[in-house]
Each structure stands twice: as structure tokens, then as C-alpha cells.
Image (cartoon, rainbow, N blue to C red; front, side, top):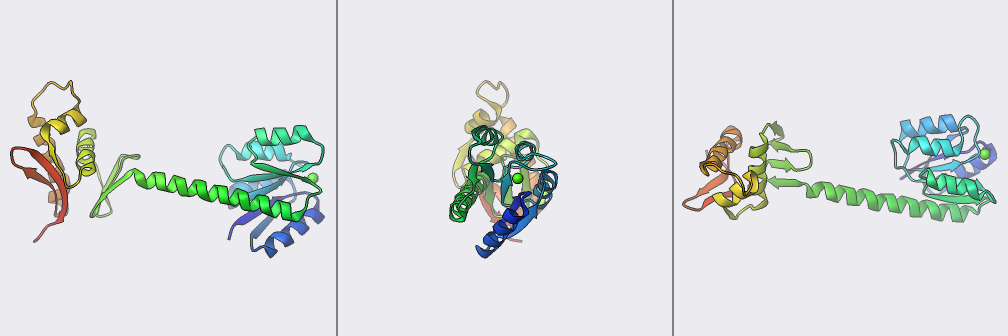
Length: 235
Ligand code: CA
């Protein structure tokens, strides 16, 4: 269940909120001033903040501003009814939503559900985007975002050209790739040099991956080029 941090100096309101939120099944943390609220938010990494704006030590606006340097936790502000400028400033500082005092608890609970749902959708999207950047075949993982290659859980150091060659082959798993394709993709159309360079890099890759880890990945297709297909070594 989600953890919610309440930052509210009016203890009666804080207690009331704590009871209601716990009743809904949330885990609850409470701070009674801005400074400790900010510290708790940074140390405990809650899933959502309910942040009063008028706070001792550090105003809610300031808590919001500082927290946004490092965190995108959803923040729902509690504001005085008529203080429009506070609301605007809070939203400008990165708060996600606000509820005016006095508030109906049902309204606040609904806003909490919306905010948590949004974060979950965002986290999910981020997670999916991340897995898109990974190419995988058997025990080989190529992370194109961080330029890391792992074989059987071990990091393998590849040069830029080796990496690009492997990446291109893995993107076309099971399909024959010609030397010209590799030349154009990895070395560029304007590369003037011997196309044997492709064979040299394939040799490097086979040495670093196939030979070392006893697998077979890069197959030679006679008079065409190469084909990536992951196979465990027989012996
Ligand atoms: Ca207050």
C-alpha cells in the first residue's frame, strides 16, 4: 500500500488526516513543521505528500521548491480558502493539486487516488521505455541506453564499433546482414576503406563473446555476410 506523508502544523487536522488515511489502508508519516517535513520526504521516500502551506520553520512553498530538485513525488497542497496567490505559487513550484481548507475528506481522498494513479501510469511508462532499450538473446543483454553489454551476468567491455556491430546484428536477429549493411550502419556511407574491416570486427566480437562464453551467436553466411542467432555450444 502507498505511504503518505502529512506535513501539517495544526495537530488536530494532522491527527484527523492520519486516522482517515490509515482507515483507507495507507501507511502514514506525519511531520509538524516544514523542515522536518522536507527531511522526512527526502529520507523516507513516500508515495505522496499532503502539504500544508502555512508552516513553521519552512513554508510549504519552500518545501515544495526544494523537494522538486530531487523528487517528483506527487504533492497535494492544503491551502486557505481565499488565498489564490498561494495556490498559484504552489502549483508553479511543482505541486500537483490543491485542496482548500476546510475540506471534505472524501474530496481529498479522491484527489489522492487520482494523483497515485497518475504516478503509477508514469512509472509504468518509464519502465516500458527502459525495457525497449534492451536487446536480449539467450544470456546476452545489450542496453543501448547505457552502452552496456552483459553475457551470463558479466559485463563485457566492447569498443564503440564492436558495440554498434553487435547492436545492429541483434536488431536483425535471425536475418542475414550483408557486409555493406554493416559498413553503412556502423562505419557510415562515406567510409573509405577496406570492407574487410567488418570481418575484423566480427572476429573481435566472436573472440570476446562466443569463444569466451562458449556460445555461438554470429554465423557466417557464405558470400552474403553474417547472421545473429543465439546458440549454446554443443560441447
Ligand atoms: Ca498551518
